[in-house]
Length: 124
Image (cartoon, rainbow, N blue to C red; front, side):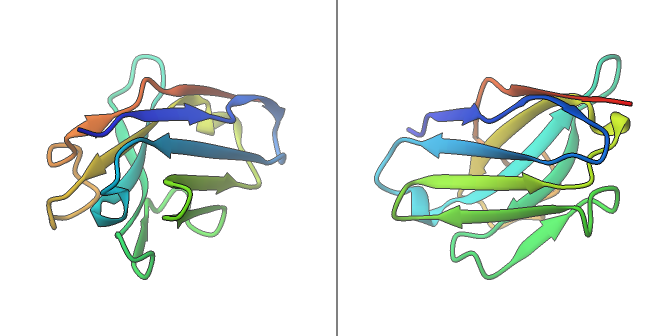
C-alpha cells in the first residue's frame, strides 16, 4: 500500500514558478513509476509528466515540455514537479500517482495509487 500526499500548490502570476512535491509512504517507493496528472474545471484529467523508478526515463505532455521538470529522490520517498513559465491554462488540480506496472506512463489506468491533489492557480 502506498499513500501519496501532494504539496506546493498555490496562486502564482503568469510567468512565475511553483514546485510541487509528492511524499509517498511505503518502503518500496523506489520500485514505482511516478506520475503527475492534472484536472482543470470542466475538463478530463490529463497526463502531465512521469518518471521511472530509476529516474533515468522521464516523460512529458507536449503542453509542458521545456517548462516543467519531474524528478525524484528515492531516499526521501518524494517526487517533484518544477513548473516554470506558468500560464493561466496550467490552472488545475495537480495529482500525484504511482504504479508498479511497466506500461505507457501517460495513461491514468495503470496507476494504482493517487493523492488527493493540490490546487495550482495561475493568474493572467
